Length: 473
Ligand code: URP
Ligand code: ZN
Ligand code: ZN
Image (tube, rainbow, N blue to C red):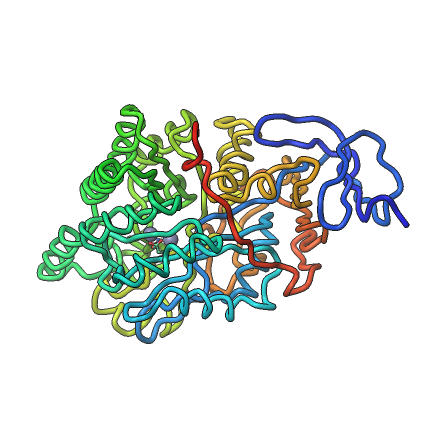
């Protein structure tokens, strides 16, 4: 019997801390050797000229989530994990969203049923808590944390999801007691509603006005409030999809106080601006870029880049929340034409996160390859209790690898993508650096933009405690 099922030979292996030219030996889905000149493999992949990176871990994606009456998300677990694999990812972390009136356990079971047998790469669910009842806080949440759902997201806005301040505090307190990580969507419900109604009263209803309805002031205030709540309770906090200088400054302030506050940002906040929502002369095409928080200014982009370079941000995720554009169940649903408030929020980005960030970050000299790996894989695994099984290249870790061509030039186009959306916000965006082979637990799941694995190869991962909650972290 061969010593290895697979050897990836001759590539430049890069982790969050090191790089070395060596082979990677894989047996039974795990890395069993890192050395030069490995032989005795059933299959050898020649990685000469390529970088061998830990497979991408995207810790913020939405898949098959209910999104309001008549609205359907464009991806199920099959298409989302296919797109993720082709984009160089080997683990994604979607949300199991609790709808009000429903329990958390039944929610989780429903998402497992959607995912089962359909995933090409590994998945692990965060929870979304929208109904913080005594049963949820007292029984369901503690039990689910013990079962490996060690992170949950809370929302400070959206009619169906918003938690009031008291509930935010209660949920954070359960997180503290049970050692789970709270992720927060920091935009303030009342201020946003006030702005929305004012704009609508002025007849400002095109998708473009989505941005002005939720200016950075609103994100800044909510970020500070969430940080204050977490400080009061004494628990770490992950502020997701930070979009603005103003919100980022709140995180810097928190860090300067020594608070365990962490931040995530996404491709849309580095590459899109409020002007993209204008579409073609304020028409509905701006709906393609409607997400929350909204893309902001070039000054905000520069601030976020500076934050990335200086270590303010721990993770770089896609916040993949795909809707079809030309579809009555998507961006062009009938109500969306009456006001921006009815345009489904979110962008498809699961397949383009890594190339965009690599190109704008590494190829343009803003970040090192090691920082790229940390921000797109290792830190996600650490923050969400998957390390060192995921997010690194080490003996004993899962053989999750992305063979990356750092010089390959590509132009992002809808026609080469695998997601369920009918557009990409980055149509025509030129990148340097592209994933050429994705290996998930030792199986080649994507190669040269083609799917090679099987649905069902991906499994659900129960998680441990976040590094943010470990002593000395
Ligand atoms: O617009 C966005 N980001 N949609 C996805 C849901 C969320 O808040 O992350
Ligand atoms: Zn959010
Ligand atoms: Zn999201």
